Image 1 (cartoon, rainbow, N blue to C red):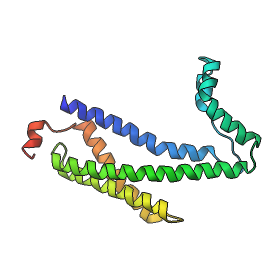
Image 2 (image 1 turned 90 degrees about the horizontal axis):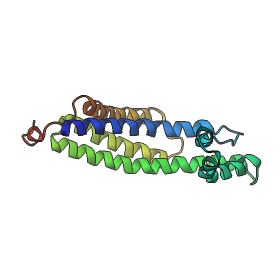
Image 3 (image 1 turned 180 degrees about the horizontal axis):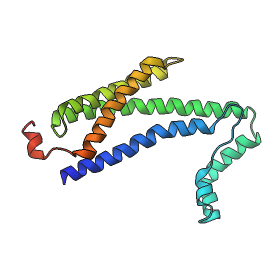
Image 4 (image 1 turned 135 degrees about the vertical axis):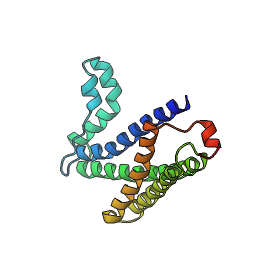
Length: 181
């Protein structure tokens, strides 16, 4: 049962990682300099099921898109880019908390013996890399380059290592973990 739970955790973690990586890239691809058009994909997907309910579910999004697209407010493009920048800042702040989560998770995994100790350490290092990267993007202008690339590599090694281990091996049986194996 514990091994199955480990594998389920691995699948869910993989889904979280993929969705987390893709969402900022998708958001940035929907806003192009000089074009404040927004994608309202849920409405398009669901209008065939029930057009009225699909419209009602999307009213807040559609209203904001309408305001931006019709120029109901001055500086439409400026507002869209300000909103995108606010999202980036919020996302970086969220990654600070995620970094703390990973650092603590790495510590617990390292001590628990449920996965190899080195893997727990790598997850902890991933957390520290998230913290450095997030604070770098929040506190400096023009952040990026080799430092950011190296930090991303550290993040990937720990997180993908954990996902791979959980998917393939699950976690050690409780008796093995307690005996320090």
